[in-house]
Amino acid sequence: MTSERPSLGTIRVVSLYDDVMSVYADRGNLLALQHRAAVLGVGVEVTRVSLGDALPVEADLLLIGGGQDREQRRIAQELATRGPKLRAWAADDVAMLAVCGGFQLFGHWYRDGQGELLPGIGLFDVTTVAPGPGWARCIGDVLAISTLDDVGEVVGFENHGGRTYLGPAARPFARVEHGFGNNGADGTEGCVYREAIGTYLHGSVLPKNLALLDHLIEAALRHRYGRDVRIAWEQDLYAARAHHAAAEVARRRAPRFEGVARP
Ligand code: GLN
Image 1 (cartoon, protein in one colour):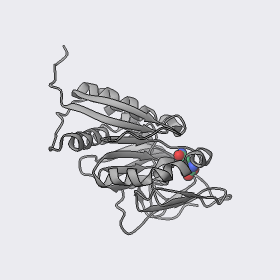
Image 2 (cartoon, rainbow, N blue to C red):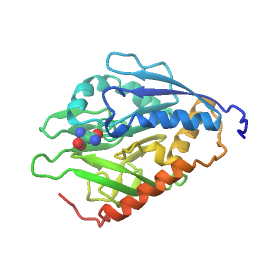
Image 3 (cartoon, rainbow, N blue to C red):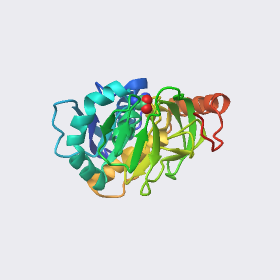
């Protein structure tokens, strides 16, 4: 029997460059959001914004996925022109999820594997450097504990050459237990600025991290309606199993983080 839920309202979602930036199924984050929102009684209006498209006037949640250096070079200059608006949104508590290559370009800058300096939008106080030939990429399963109390344990898959370093104003999104995280050296994973989250976790990350997905939906509802919304938690057996399976794999296969640089 399906239970009828009262509508909690509608959130306005921007999916940024999802035709260019979507490695490791990052576009699945949007699908997971649409599915979960329907279960919770939240409407979703999606605006896809790619190269040459204008951003809408307002948004409650923005998603951007990862991409290799080649894709990042395609979008970096244009993304930089959108910087003032995206930073203003973030300062106004628009919820955001920026994954891997998107996360890197939401920092101040990224020096890519060929030594080219790509501008970022400085939304997160982070910088990223790909050390170049001879250095291994950070590849594998990740298990980390979020600094956000309502998010808890997060799991995913990372594959990046770039090493990201947090500036003095930056708060990590999570602490790595298994895997590399931002740089393989300091145990941090991702970054949080107000309601914006940057992370290296692919997977896609949202289908297997329900608490993170609900956290973003709640933040988006708060942005839209200006009240402290609490969505009624609804179990999702598939998401719980996916999380559990990914956590098991990370514990078994990924190196336990020991606080040493692993070039
Ligand atoms: N190009 C970036 C790196 O390798 C990001 C890769 C990704 O998004 N998976 O560091």
